[in-house]
Each structure stands twice: as C-alpha cells, then as structure tokens.
Image (cartoon, rainbow, N blue to C red):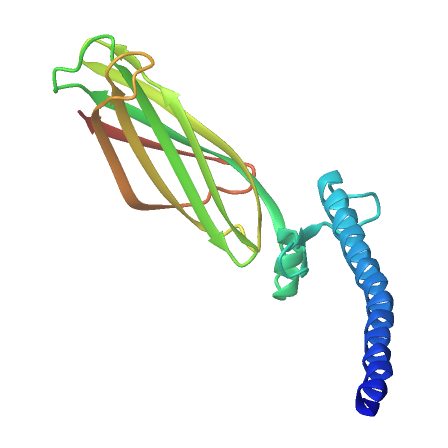
Length: 203
C-alpha cells in the first residue's frame, strides 16, 4: 500500500511537468509558424509588386530562397573583360518564289527570316514573317529585320535562315508546301548599315 501512495505523487508530478512543457512549447510553435507565414506573405507580396524603386532587379527562387541579381548584357561583357557597345542595322531578305506544285490561288504564302548572333556579351535571335504577294505562278516578298545588339565587336558573323510556308486557305493551319534553308552565315553590316540578300525558292 505504501508503494502505491509513493508512486501517485510521482506520476502526478511527471504529468504536471509534461503539461507545463506543452504549455510552453505550444506557444513557441505557434509563434514560429506565425513568423514563417508572415515572412512568406511579405516575400510573395514583394515579388508580385515587381521591381521597387531603388531595389535590385533579379529572381528569387521560392524553393531555395536564393536570390540571383539580373546582369545586363553590357555588365556581363564587362565582367568578362570585354568592352561592349550597341550596334544597330537592318537585315533584308528578298524572296523570289516560283510556284510549280499546283498551289491553289487562294493559298496563303508566308516568308520568314531568322537571324542569330552569338557574342561574349550575349546571344540574340531575331525573327520576322511577312505575307507574300502572288501574281500567277510567282510570288515575292521582302522581310526586313531592324536590330539593336550589345556586342563586344562589330566584326560578327550572323547565322541567317529562312522558310517559306504555304497554307491551304486564309486562316487555315494546314501546310501544303514548305521550303527552308539553314547554315548560311553573313557578315554583319557596318554599324547603322543594311545587309540585303536575295533568295530564289521553288515550290
């Protein structure tokens, strides 16, 4: 009987200690969750609001919390020890198209030019599409791409490709005929200048 009377206060004491610990830990957990939730809400609001005046533009990874600052092409070139400058010009591609595939007279013919240049300061890609004008069994179109690139030098090779697509009818996504050419490189024109290339395509 004495052993039971001695154990009862001990169990009560252990239970009281556990209850007190739970009372202390529970508010701490709630406070921790509240702080974490508040931080996430503030980060989300700042991200949704976009770049702030006086802030640093960049990307915040929501999973890792890592922030990567945006580096402009000129800054990237300077990081590599290269003096960068802005080069402008126009790339013109003229298409002479001969139609020999029985293409319907109401078919839509689109001409596309793509230009790519790679440089220590960055890689640029330009694309433009223009609708050709048809006369009988021939069609013509001229596609001009004005550009403005930040480059380490004006002595560049431009990868220039083209494609001509014939669609069944206006608004149709059915391609009746296609011709493409890749792997052609041209010299970049002098700053502010124009490069003109004529291509002959048979469809």
